[in-house]
Length: 77
Image 1: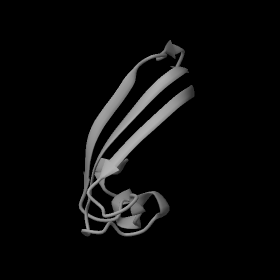
Image 2: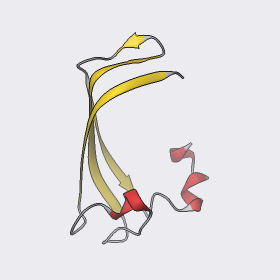
Image 3: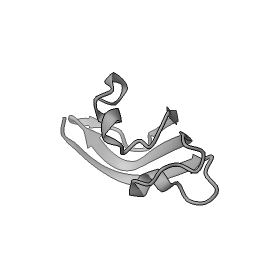
């Protein structure tokens, strides 16, 4: 999949300060619950123009998302 994207990201989570998952630390509550939104100012994905579009999602990870055992989980493949 080829992509070239420019835009911004919004991430909020239930941790006390900034989301520790971004730097590989364990979430404050032991789980990661967050909302993510990506807004594409300009860009293409596999030749499809996605300029002006926004993608948003809710996330729940039962432990630190950067831990190895989650990489084997079918949810994260």
